[in-house]
Length: 346
Image 1 (cartoon, rainbow, N blue to C red):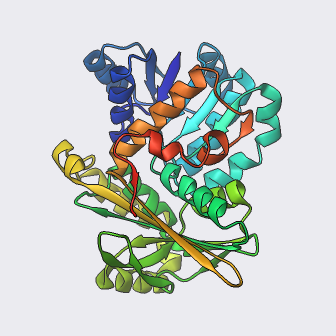
Image 2: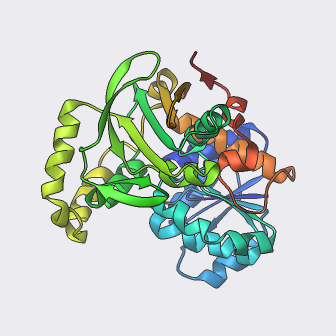
């Protein structure tokens, strides 16, 4: 039995739809009882409503389930609580985060999860299934590489409210990257590349993406940086944000942006998702050589629903590794190609 927590969010609903299409038995849950009940009636599935303040209540609730698909962000504030409860209740845990803090925090729970006989696999969606698999593929083809660069961009789609809120929560922290195994920070907009994504070239800017953690744990590569497709205007705005770093860290300022986000659509329409694609690029470098690869996938939200449900199916079938895992460490470098619509760009 699967519990989808945060099911009434934009991506949560997509996961519920995908799970039902695969004939999986699910129960949905969330903090808002009215929203959860409304979705339960629409999807014709059982529901539970609880927040994340009463840890013992969460543990007692999770004991009825084999797996939690955690969709309630920002995950920086919710993932550790849910993961700890999963360890206590011996319930497998996956989520759809791309937040580097979550990967770092849950990695520290590896031994506890292994002793409980469960798997903790954050990043079971677009963040970070395709990029984690790409990193593993690059390392497999060039074992001597000690520097990894990854990038992604999209065509024809917008952000969900949840993704936009996560960006607001982290914008004041600058761009994080990994150097000689250590996480370091630089100013936003300082690191840029003109990247060939296969179908087109696009200027791209360094961001604090989850692969600075997951790719390191998957491959052991000590130097990792992640970029995303951008524009000159966006990069200029990021540079200006550096001057407002302290202001953007204030809670009341963040709340202003969060309220504006709440007034926007939940996420891209089905029509936009269908027409959109994601393009990923990766480069591994060593002393005397380098190697590049490219992958094309469906829109990130569509991919997230498909990959999260695929991983859930594997776990329910007894296919999992105990403890903290990344997508590629659990299921191999070619996991991404098990998902409809994903292919390598030659």
